Each structure stands twice: as structure tokens, then as C-alpha cells.
Amino acid sequence: MKIGKLKAALIAFVCLFMTACGRGEEQSSDTPAELDVTFIDVGKGDCIVAECGGSTLMIDTGYEATYKDVSDKLTELGISSLDALIITHYDKDHVGGAAKMAENFDIGTVYLPDYEGISKPYEKFISVMDEKDIKSVTVSEDISFSLGEAAFEIFASDVAYTDPDGEEGNDNDVSLVVSASIGEDSFLFAGDIEKEGISAYLAKHSAQYDVLKLPHHGGKSKNSDDLIGSVSPGIAVITDSSDQPADDKLLALLEGVSVYRSSLNGDITVTTAGQGINVRTEK
Image 1: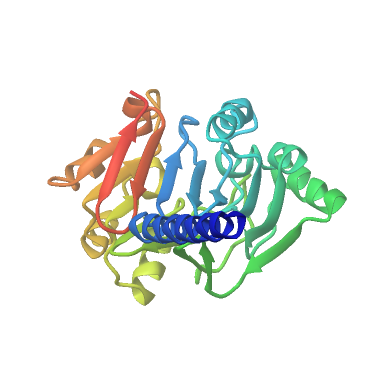
Image 2: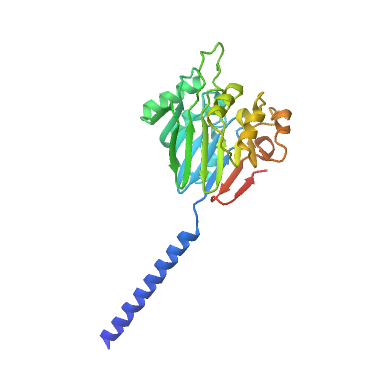
């Protein structure tokens, strides 16, 4: 009797185990990885967070003064570290919060544009990276890597950096441009490129993207229409502010495109598993 009961119990256990395994496999295959991209509202500045498959990347860090807003948003998202941080260029509205990010968050790799900045936020950030021995990569040629199931590419600038007469020189035009894709859906994050940077980008790239982060916070360049026409986005995101809004002439070029703006929508989150895009806004 004891042996019979033991056999029955073993058979039941094996069946239960196989059923559980089968359910786990079925759930895994039915739940595709998602790419979540959050444009954090830092006013007229950039701070973009991408999450996929448990990995996290940030593009630019906003201002030093907006670091607490960024930190609070990361806490809300459950993010305590970054696998990668990309700084597109060294203006204060892009690198301003970088030193505090490096001080307070573990960062795997920092990707930097191929020139030396002169601003205090840049110098402070470089100092913190040296102190914490954070790995950095200078992007002098295109770089590809994965973030979970998503594919990312950083496009190096072909524009020559000129020494500035003032504080910033032409570093908008030497901004790194970043793309991301998962399944059938794709993003282009165009930094702050203006006329020269747009021309250099279009000379090498002609791919279309579903989501375009407009360059330079919705400022219009003479060839903005060429960029928008080439990318042909269905969704456009503009990181502007109420006191420094997107240019009306630029907005007129986006007829037929779903436009989201930090000044109107606050934080903007774009989510996709590669077969359709969902947009959520704070406002």
C-alpha cells in the first residue's frame, strides 16, 4: 500500500511539474519584450529613458537644476542603475544633470561625442567619471548594441567641430544621433542637429522611422523639411517648454503626424513590443 501510494504521488508530481513547465513556456512565448521610451519633461532640454528586457539606457540628462525631477521619475519607474548613458553633446540642457547622475546611479558605459566640451557641467561630469572609474566610449564611428530585445545604433557626426567664439561653438551640429528598433517599430532621436548636422546625417542615412524626436526642441532649420520627409514619422516628439515653444513653422511641417510636446503633455512615454505603438502622457 505504501509503495502504491508513493508511485501515485510521484506520478502526480511529475504531471504537475510538466504542466507548470508547459504553462511557463507558453506564457514566455506569448509575452513579447516591450521597449518603453520615456521623454522626461525637463523644459527645453533632453532627458530620455529607454527600458527593455530589464536593461535601461538614458539619452542626455537635462539640466543640473532638473536633476531631482529626473531622479524622482527614475524612482517612480523602479530604475536604480543605467546600463548605458549617451550624451549627444555638451550643452547644459543635455549634460547638465550628468554629474549628479554619475554620483548617484551606477552607470555601465557612457557614450560621448568626439570633441571636448568647455562648460562647467561638462568638466564636473568628466571629473566624477574619473573619480568613479566609469567606462566611457568616444563615438568617432557608428556603434551598434542591444538593449534587451531592442537594437540601438549611435551615429557619429561627420561635422567638424570648430572652436567656439562663445560658450558653445557649433556643437549642436556635432550632436550624436541615435536610433532604436524592436520588431517592426523604430525610433530616431536627433539630438540638437541643425542645418549642417541635418545635411551630414541625410548624406549617409535615408531610413524611415515610426517615431522622431525632433532636433533642437522644435527649432526650425532651412532643411528641417528634408529631415522630416526622409524619416516620414507617424509620431513626433518635441522637447520644448511653455516659455520656449516649438517654432510654428516647424509645426506646420508636421501636418498629418501625431505630435507630442513636453510643453503641453509633460512626460511622454512611448511603448511598443514591435507590432504597434502606444503613447501615454502626463497631461
